[in-house]
Image (cartoon, rainbow, N blue to C red; front, side):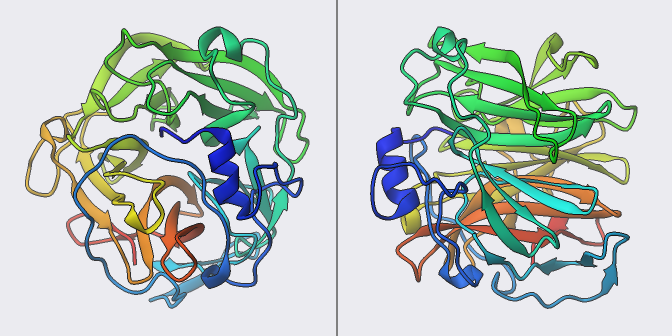
Length: 368
């Protein structure tokens, strides 16, 4: 999503100065979700305010509970009770051999690690220096400012997509790095995946890698402008092949696409409204679904997402404002969603939330 310049981002993130935090993850450690730090940057325009949802995000109650093979309890549906370093923007989560990892917007990509998915500790930035090719596509990029990463395992490697751009611009690119494993940390630059300029009517940021039921990789991406796009990827290089499909658009802001598959439907989650303005943010998480990966994606009322349709998954929830920047990781049969919110009790600081999605009798997802 579009962001403020790096200096402003870090002022919000660290809450004190424009200097990058050496602890990683962009925030000082806290002891609960109600006292975490840090915000990142800003998005483009405005939209109407969000609404409503069910139980408080600070609750970790659940309707059922079980223990996974790695000892991590999975409740369905539930908000996870998170502690530790919780400052986050645009979180992406993944489990690897019993360890949970989170990556987020920040200089060189900030990250966190957890042994149980609940208690989080910060990590150093993934990339200590800029890659030379970044300046070829986004010459005005501020420092190592990278946005909205996405992390997945595929073909025996860990793949990390990320965005580089500048505030309010379509001069953007999606980059790619891979490693033998996240724990090994032997990240290899895989170069540019797709880029846009002011001549395009869409924006190459907010990537989401999705592997379809047949094992084919796809990339969804897009922010504002003409909306959310989808392209098939080469299975070896994870670079685009074939045509570009349009999935969703909406006046007033749409970005952060996330795809998942369940019960014969592809589900497209998006963030609509504006982010990155603390408690003035109007973000909310919305969804539509389709029987075909390329669409059409319809909401609960049958309205096409290309005509502005979308159904609410999560809106404002008491002190937690502007949920969005979501990512889904399916683990032990449960769909786990990470997203950020703004804490009305802590000057609008951006906070990591993780929840197990619920699914209603009609096959529609919701967040508790």
